[in-house]
Each structure stands twice: as C-alpha cells, then as structure tokens.
Length: 115
Image 1 (spheres, rainbow, N blue to C red):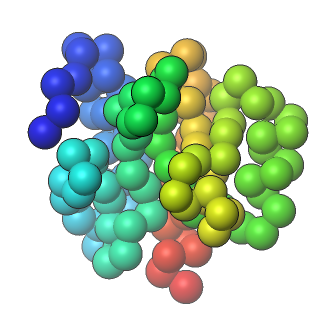
Image 2 (cartoon, rainbow, N blue to C red):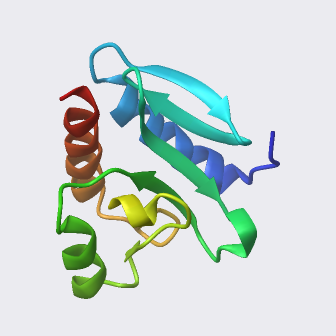
C-alpha cells in the first residue's frame, strides 16, 4: 500500500463516502490504489502514479464526455494512462475539486458499469 498524506487520506474518505453510498458497491485495493466495484471497477484512485502531479480518481465516462471535460477544464480533468483510450476520465482531487461534479461523475460511472 502506498504512503498517503493526511490530505490525500481525507480526500479518499470523501470519495469513499460517495462511492459506498451506492448500492452493492465493494472496495478493494488493486495495484496499490483504492478501487470501488459494482461488481466491475467504476472508480479508482491515482496516488501520483507514474509521477503524476496530482491525486485523482479515474472513472469511466459516456462517449464524448472525456474530450468535452478535458477541453473545458484541463486543470481539473485529464485523459488517464491505460484507461483513457477507453474513454475514462481523470478527475484531479487535490486542488479544490467541485464535489458536486465529482459525485455526479461517480454516479454516471457506476451506472455505466451496472448497465
């Protein structure tokens, strides 16, 4: 398990609350990161993976959403490594995130995985 700062742990707790409030969700550590599943992964933390500058969450997104979000606000959204080619979106969490937006994106990701 990676060493996390108090700030990163607090952000993880807030994200955990959003994810675990959804029905039939489990939490599992994979690749040294927190993942939330229903039963497939719909949210995964990224703790400065491969030198990333930010703590973030990776989420599946509907077609076109990744490009729209990254184009609209590249400081908050990015195309994550590995899953970005499948349309997943990276959401930066350690620079004052819009938690209403994070919650909406998590719920959308959950619904996509459950469909």
